Amino acid sequence: MTRSIQSLLILCALLAAALPGAALARLNIEITGGVEAAQPIAVVPFGFAGGGSASIDPGAVIAADLARTGRFAPMPTRDMLDQPTTHEEVDLRDWRLLDMNNLVIGQVVREGARYRISFILYDVFRGERLAGATLTATAAGLRNAAHRIADQIHETLTGIPGVAATRIAYISATGRGENARVTLQVADADGYNPQVIVSSTEPIMSPAWSPDGRRIAYVSFESRRPAIYVQELASGRRERVASYPGINSSPAFSPDGRRLAMTLSKDGNPEIYVLDLDSRALTRLTNHFAIDTEPAWSPDGSHLVFTSGRGGNPQIYRVPASGGAVSRVSFEGDYNASPVYAPDGRSIAMARRINGAFRIALLDVERGFSRLLSRGPLDESPSFAPNSSMVIYATTHGGRAVLAAAAVDGGANQRLTQGTDQVREPAWSPMVQ
Image (cartoon, rainbow, N blue to C red; front, side, top):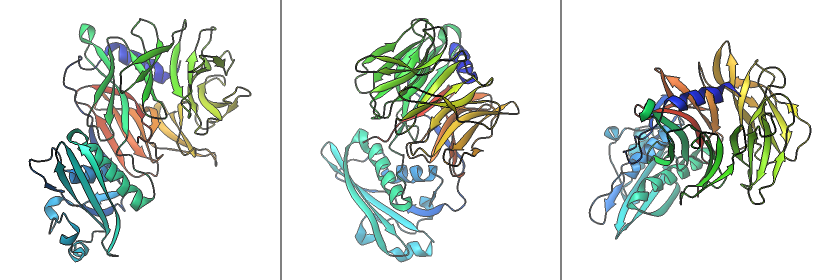
């Protein structure tokens, strides 16, 4: 069993999250580093029409989304010379004087029980309209609509899809003894709208998203022994898919969503298996006296990478999805674990031990060299953003278990906390439609 699994078992056994029915604290996100050449952009507060008022200003949400990427430096509202909300009110000369590269304006119009949200993105110096669209949403969906606008702006200006409209799953824990409770939660990428997926007085671990973002697989000890469950987010319906004697851990959906890789010790030793979720046929991929665990699929589904101690210390290996010869992947450092592929297939993130500290390393798949993304001393459980631009992982800060995110290009960094709760094992969702 790898150190990350051992440490989480201890943590989950001692800690837990708020009792069911209690108000959930959102994930607080602190930007701890950015890109020096961040693009200046002005996102004007959106106008509102149609009676009443909007629960949020989409402009503020969009500005915050762009700031978290580290690629943009939104202008403070107080520094704006004017606040236009329609194309006719825009004078780009004002924004050139303020050295803004881009300008975003928009309006929210209430139409009965729904809202119409429109925006325009300008290139200030070229005097061009780069993008614009109109979305509709309920009051509860205004924030998500703003996230989608932020993603469209991000892709227009960088060529890379944004991830503001995605979600993050994580384990939250608080309390001790009889008051201990662990929850699997899902929140928006900006930390808002946390929702409890499952809650227990026993450990919960290893959340993994299905490729369509509609299901989550996880390990629960609620029956006093580990079992793997798959749960639908919309309905809450769940199914226990693996409860063999011994270890049932590390579920990972295949890219087509039809199979689930996992670690089982039902035959005496922890090995990598693949379960067909339709036929329930179980295929064993590894066969070695060492511990094989933490499987992760390649984006094309052709093979899996996993952690194994077959070389003496934990290292990363790969095996064809249909079974076959195992080959070693990691060669730097005496301890590498918890591998995960970037969605674009270009790199693998892993937890690496260096001089007793655990840090997140990034391996370039094609060129074979690696570099460090985090500073330690206890960084683990990496998960890529669906656009491959960032890695979120579990770490510690001020003696507490928190989450952190680092940009793959060495730019933006974030720290994510949740009130007084301990948070671990993040899993970034795929792109949602």
